[in-house]
Length: 302
Image (cartoon, rainbow, N blue to C red; front, side, top):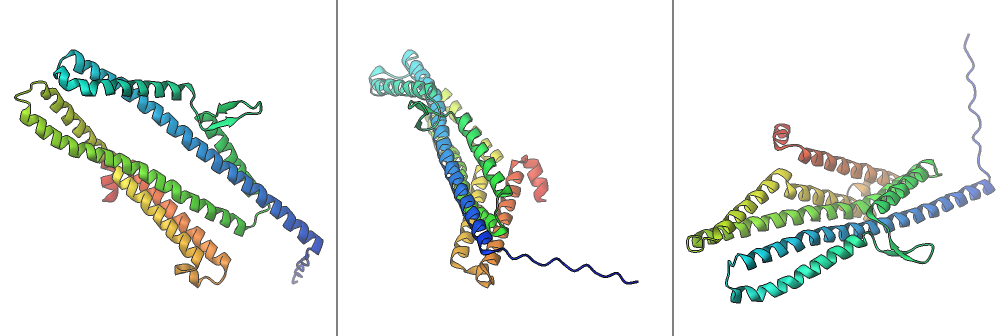
C-alpha cells in the first residue's frame, strides 16, 4: 500500500512590520559591528606604538653600554693618539648619555600612547594589556558574527574587509624581513671590504688583528643567519601574497578578470572569498616550509 506523502507546510511570508523590524535589527547589528572594528583598529595602532617603544628601549639598553665599553677600551688601552681620538670621544659621551636617558625613560614608562583614565589622569596601557584587550575584542567580534543576524553575504563582505586589512599586515611583515636581509647583506659587503683592508695593514698595526678577527666573525654570523632563516625568501613570499590579494581586490571592485563573468554580485563575492582563502592557505604552507630545517626543506622539495 502506497504511503501518502505529507505536503510541505506553506511558506510564511513576513509582514511589512516584521520585515521592517528585521531590517532595523540588522542595521543595529551592523552599526555595533562597525564600532567593534573601530576599537580593533585603535587597539592595533596602540599595540604597534607599544612594540616600537619596546624595541627602541632594547636598542638603547644595548647600544649605550656597548658604546661606553668601546670608548673605555679606546681611552685606557691607548690604541690611538689622543689628538685623533678627541674629536670622536666627546660626541660619543653625549650619545651614550642620550641612550642611557632614553633607556630610563622608555623602561620607566612602557606601553602605548598616553590616554586619560576614568579619573582624568594620564597613563599608558602596557603591551600585555593591549594584547589582551585586542584578543578579547576580536573574540567578541567573532561571537557577534557567529551568533548575530548576519546572512552569508554579510559574512563574506566582512571577510572581504578583513582581506584588505591583511594586505597591509603582510606588507609590513615583508618589510621587516627585507630590512633584516638588507642589514645582513650590508654587513657582508662592508665586512668583506673591511676585512680585506684591515688584513693589508695588520702587519704594521698589531691592534688591527683583533679588528680583522671581529669583522670575520660578524661576516660569518651574517652569512649563517641569512642562509638558515631565509629572510629574503620570507619577504618575497609575503609581498607576493599581498600583491595577489590586492590584485583580486581591485579586480572585484571594478569587475574585471574572473569577476566580469559572474552573473550576480553574490557570485562574484563568493569567487573572491574562495580565491583569497586559497592565497592565504598557500602562504601558510610556504611559511611552514621555510620554518623547517634546511635538510627537511631539501627533502620536501625533492
